[in-house]
Amino acid sequence: MKKLSNIPCPTDDNAWREALQGVQKTRQPEIPPEAEAPLIIGEVRPTIDYANVYKGKDLKQLAPGDFANIDRQTAEKFRRGAFKIERRLDLHGLSEKEAFEAVDAFIRDAYLHNKRCVLIITGKGLKKEDDAWYEKKGILKECVPGWLNAPGLRPLILAICSALPEDGGEGALYVLLRRHRDSHTRAIF
Image (cartoon, rainbow, N blue to C red):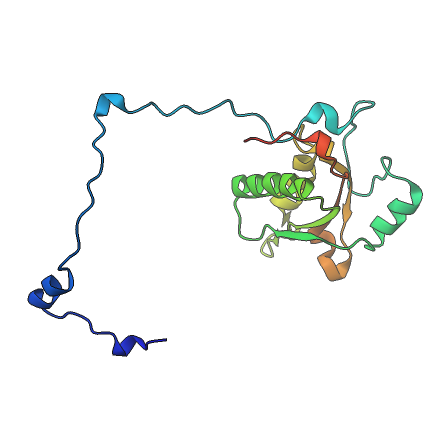
């Protein structure tokens, strides 16, 4: 293999013209502007067929620590943090809008990739120490459980609960996703 320093490099115009001797430009076919076909984009279909994801009674709102959708053994394992955390999403530093979009994309992607248990780190919020009552402000901590109950995400989720201290404690949520079945999704392409 030749070293880069051993390859001659043309430094002036004459050397460059010499290096290009014998090189011919290929002719490109000319396409008249009126012959160009217009760009046609097919119908965009949702990736997840929500009608098939969950069949049964109406979905009730999920609250952290509510395990009505899963059996006792699975609930106990989930609450103890015994499920392997397959993906993590840290929302620190994001605005409310950015965080919502991140949570939405994160849950859908995790579901489509057959992930079972994921962790969403919301943070605990900020404390205003100059206030006599120590007002606590944790917008994302309060909003994320509601976002997980949105019609687009709720059918994908079995349960949510606060994380163990080593995974973020009250500033994080474990999310247990339903098992992904290929018949539940339709490809966009």
